[in-house]
Every structure is written in C-alpha cells, then in structure tokens.
Image 1 (tube, rainbow over the protein chains, first blue to last red):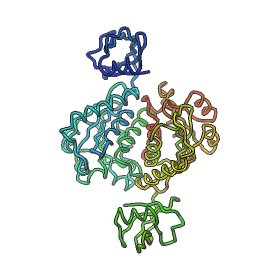
Image 2: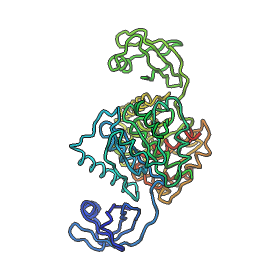
Image 3: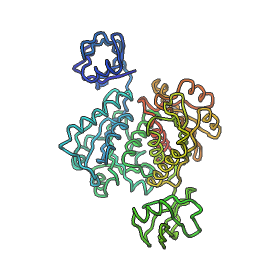
Image 4: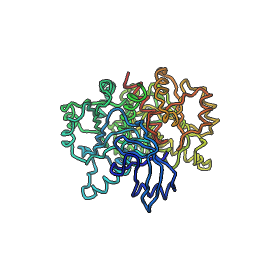
Length: 250
Length: 250
C-alpha cells in the first residue's frame, strides 16, 4: 500500500492532513478520492492507516483508521560515513543504503576523494539527497527517513566518533591480507539499540594515514571478504550483513 | 596490481601471451613496458604473476614469475536467477553481483517481467553482459568470470533446479509477513562446495503462481528482512549475506 512521510505538525490524535507534493501525488498521480486509504508515517515511529475524508484544493484531509505498530527499522542504528565518491555514486549509495536500513549518512572529504563538496550548490544537493532518501524509505516501507548529515572533513568525522559504541572501517589492505574476523567479531559484541559507525573510503579506499588515525580512535579495520569491492558496493555489503546478522539469523 | 583474464590457449607452462583488447589496455592505457608485471588468470583457478619480456605490435609476451594460489571465490557456488528487470538494471546486477562473488547468472522471463529478451539483439546483449562481468571480475580480483547463461523462460528455470542442492526464492509476501528464518536456516544447512540457486523476481516480485510452482520444486520462500527491497537490490543482499555467513563469520 502507498505510504507517505508526513511531518508531525500535520498530525492530530485521530487525523492527518497532507499538503504539498505528497497531496499532489495522492490526487494527481495516484488519483485517490474520498474513501481511499494509504499509510502515513510521522518519521518518529508512528505509522497509521489513513482514509481520505475530504479534499480541499491541494490539501488532503484524512482520518486515522488504525494505528500500525510494526517497525521495519534495523534493530541497530547504522551510520554510513562515506568518503565522497565520483559522479552520482553518492545518490546511489543513499538510495540503496536507505532500502537496506541505514540510520544516517555522513559524506566526508577523504584523502583520496577526487571530487569536492561544492558549497555553492550544497543546499540544492542536500535537498536532492534528502528527496532520494525519502522516496527510497517510502518504497521500502520504512518507518523513518534516514538523516543526511552535513558533509564534513575527516577531522569532523573523528570528532563525531564518541557517540558510537561500535566503530568499523572497510579497509582494502585488510581484505587483501585475508583478514576475515574483525567485522564478524564487532557484530557479535553489538546489542539491540547500539549505534554503529561504518567508514567507507572513496575510490581507492582510505589512505594509510586515515587508517592509522581511525585505528587510534578505536575503529576496527575490517576486510569485507577476499574480493575487492567498489566504494559504492561496500556500504551495501555492510548493511546487508548487519541485517542478516540481526534480523534473519536471530 | 592490474589483472587480466587470458584464455587458456594463450598459456604455456612458463609464459602467457596477451593479445587484443587486453594487450591494448596494457600498452596504451597502463603504458606498461618490458620488465613491468601484472597478474594473469586463466578463469579455471590458475593465477600467475607475469612479467613483460617482449612487445610485438599489439601482442604482449610475458614470462610467469610466480604462481599465485589464493582464491577470491565464494566457497559456495551461487547462481542468481533474475526475473528480467527494466532498463539497465540487469547490467547493474551483473556488475555488482560479480563483485560480490556470484558463480553464474540466469535471466528469465517472469510473469511480471515488463521487458522481453529481444532475440534479434540477443548475441550483442549477451556479449555486453559478459564484458561487464569480465571487467567486474578483474576489478574485484576474482579468479574466474561468472557465467552468463542464455536467458530462458520460467519453465527453463524449473528444468535446471535439480542441479542445485539449495534452492531459495526471495518472496516479498514472506517479508511482509515478517518471515525471518527461512534464508538463515537454508544457509545453516549449506556446506562448502554446495551449489545455491537464488531466484529473484522482476519489479513487483514473483507471482503467487510462480511462488507455488517453486514451492513444489523444493524452493524455500524467503523474506529478506522487514524492508521491501528493489529487484536489483535483492541479489546484492543475498550475495552479501552469503559472503558474511561463509567468509567472515567463520
């Protein structure tokens, strides 16, 4: 069933009002009418089945038919700290990473990042990334849209590490050396509700210098199997493995 | 280090001859010269460090400096049977699936496949998919290039199922019903060297009819967590989880 993320101020105890693009989508694209229903999420875990009771121009008035409890969120909060990659790979990582349950994304300028974050275009770019995350969250039936944090430097990344209980970094050199246990042992120490910070380098991976600094800051250097993964594939591997570990393996 | 897949007829006991596109790449793109070395794979598990001893026009003559044993292949053979998706998603699945260790790919026309495999363009299309697989295998340091099987029908898929010990199908309905254990229990029964057939539907997933037939043929209907994955994301989830299960978790 169609679902929309509606900000909390549009919610009352027994009703939700939808405006703007979502209302347009409901009326023009889905061609819904009074009596039709869909799912609304408030991005704080509340998920309700809503029925249209009135349409006023581009405003859709609904009543809440039923509260839906079930959460589609990963039991751990995974933040993907992604070294800025080339081209549209960041958009791709955010779309797929959202499907796979990421809690938030932090793009950072790594030693080997070829592209720089263009501050002139920053606002528009971040809006576009947020739109991609919102649409992927709706399509994958999530209860919240992951946060896109403001892109920063490597030292900004080091500053934010204290908030996280488990800190890992995908390190190609470890993969080449056939390191196989760090990532699995990190997950075995994780508990429901923990926050996990995963650092992935850009094309070419993180530098030896960055690896040493992350090591100093309590990061576990992890190989992700014997094959060398592209920068945009590594976060999907991490999120899939985390989902398998916590949601399927039980 | 740069690596190239070279067909067995170009191998002698102590030397490898590189011709065609790979030779061009070595000479024009990598600008290598006599004395430079790179890795050659014969796609049957043989991986050798080779040094250039002579360049004759577009032919590169090497001597084998050292045999390299280590395999970067998944310890189980995973075939991805992919319901034909829209647009360039099949190319994307083959590129990423190769990075993640797939053994072979079988595209099939599913009930909900919107696109049809165009037999007029079939040869060219398959060549393109094979090129994508070869390049992804080289980039990810694999020892073999996955096979791209000739696309077929759903009944062709049913015919090939006997060859596989473990047969699973990603089924959205199971995901919605919060089914969490089938995939993990399937992997727990798998042993090194086993062959695993993973069926993924196109956009919209496999139909109830297809699900019932696969069920009759010994397939396990598996949800892949509480989030609904796009058709091109499901195979990456399966391969990542299989790699985590066999290569990292130990």
